[in-house]
Amino acid sequence: MVTFQDIESARKRIADAVYYSPCPHSIPLSDITGMKIFCKLDNLQRTGSFKERGARNALAQLSRDQQKRGVIAASAGNHAQALAYQGRLLGVPATVVMPRFAPLIKVSTCQQLGATVVLHGTDFGEARAHAHKIAAEKGLAYINGYDDPAIIAGQGTMGLEIVEQIPDLEAVLVPVGGAGLLAGVSLAVKTLRPQAKVVAVEAENVASFSAALEADKPTKIAMLPTLADGLAIPQVGTNAFQIARPFVDVTITVSEEQIALAILRLVELEKSVVEGAAATPLAACMSGKLEELAGRRVVLLICGGNIDPNVLSRVIERGLVADGRLGRFTAVISDRPGGLADLAAQIASTGASVKQIVHDRAFASPDVSAVNVLCTVETRNHLHLSELRARLKSRGVEIHDAE
Image (cartoon, rainbow, N blue to C red):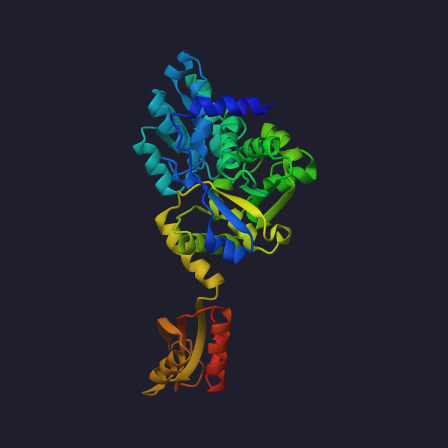
């Protein structure tokens, strides 16, 4: 078992190689959640995530012979990048095995940092099995990204920093995948501030920690696609679960829609680009499931910023839809001159903006004088979108939900 002293030792070990990230108060996030929000910005680490803490601590403790032979790990991306970067600083060759559909930005970054990247399997479990096979064949040290004691102790250094920066914190919200971060941070925070609440936050499509709590032991789950790819671990770590379980006060799951909306809020209000996993704490705050934290001093672990730019653009659009700021419907209008102009004028009269219009004559109604128009519009919120639809219906425009 990892001890608090292990975390303190890890902090000394990694001090010269890992960024002491800021933890500022966020006025806009506090306003929208009703809590006093502080953001621990570990997305500002060199490789964009907290994983450097554990990677450095683990690599520094290897024997010289093992450091020469190298290390290997399976990772969805962030642990891989951390090993590659910290391995390069220490002169330790790193091989990383990623699922074939890992985010391209994480694959290319690992390669740029000098790691040997192997793409194998459709999920983390298959990638891990292949990594163990290569480790046995080549004599490489396998470093588990969330269950290795040295990794857990390294991640716990974030908890030490948080308590120093926000000494009167009342709650900390931690994203959970394999539970290594949760284990280290909860141990550090609860040791120094026993009254502070530790809230574990999962994506509902990959809720392996909740499954472990229900079964009273780590158990493998069937995973669904998620924006929080960094949390897509089919089974929490045994060591991590044993450490974290007694310290976790509340476990919250958040939906894909809530994650997308949280990413949008962080981009707009906090000016922070984050990946899905890092947005889950804010998603939990906005979910309505943590009313007991109203007015409390709450720290959100913004643990990573490595989101594929192409995914980010789609996520922002999904967030706008969830926010009621992007809507779509089909209107049946006259195909005679002036029909489309009248529709556009009605939309403009409500203050909405037309983003896209597509005519559909082939699959319109039997009335050859009518045409279906698929409208994508920008509105202020859900109420504004409802007002727009009501206005069009009141003017005799037939409206249908877009398929």
